[in-house]
Image 1 (cartoon, rainbow, N blue to C red):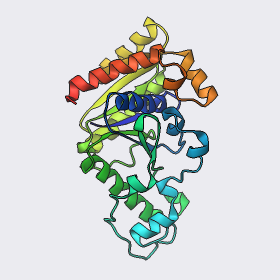
Image 2: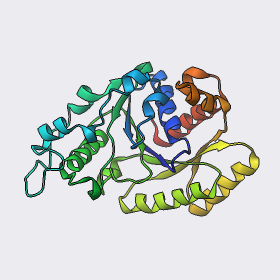
Image 3: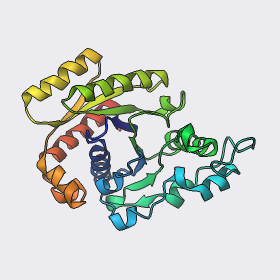
Amino acid sequence: MKLAVAGKGGVGKTFISGTLARLLARQGYKVLVVDADPNINTASSIGIPAEVADKILPISDNEELIRYKTGVAPGKSYGQMFKLSPTVSDIVDNFGVVGPDGVQLLIMGTVKGGDAGCMCPANALLRILVQHLLIQRDEILIMDMVAGLEHLGRGTARRMDTMLVVVEPRMKSIDTVRRTLKLAKEIEVQEVLAVGNKVRNEEERQFIETNMVALDVPVAAYIPYDDSVAMADMLGKAPIDHDPDSQALKALSGLIEYLSRRYDF
């Protein structure tokens, strides 16, 4: 199964990405999590210690690797030729970090804009890497995405089973789902599902459901607001380690059952 987790900042997509990965690994699946969010905090959600995570250099910032793979250093590619199809099959093994329950994490970073200088070699490397992860590897892939979909090109995105858009009961979050749907259609993502998060009561649940019906987006799960998730974040611990019996984790187990039925894995 290949899935991307997207949504407005602060809605809990990193919590869902990291905890889903741990729960799936405990069921015996081989799981790779790719952190493609510039905030880079999936490691703590998985349970990788801060002293380890702080030493990880995102692929997008690894100038030595980019130079080796493309033949050109970032920021110095004007007028130079670089490899459009660099070999990337070794990157996960060489730069991935194995966390609790055997979950592997690759911090990819994100595509840079033109204001950061010419990043064409870095962008080329990241896009080929995403294509490799989606097409040539056989584990469960969970991509913790920035709100945009810059990493996913047309055609490559067809290989993704679904995009999970995390939505909280707020209109700004609904607007993000609307924009994500437009982007997903443009790059031919096969399916978009919603995950309601931080739901405190039936009124908030109905708010999400009504708006998702209007957008024709199925809701795969509703995750209740859970103080233990916030406390885990304050303590710098993975939610699954802080409180394995929390209501939010139970709801995420239901999400796995939903995805398993839908995609037969």
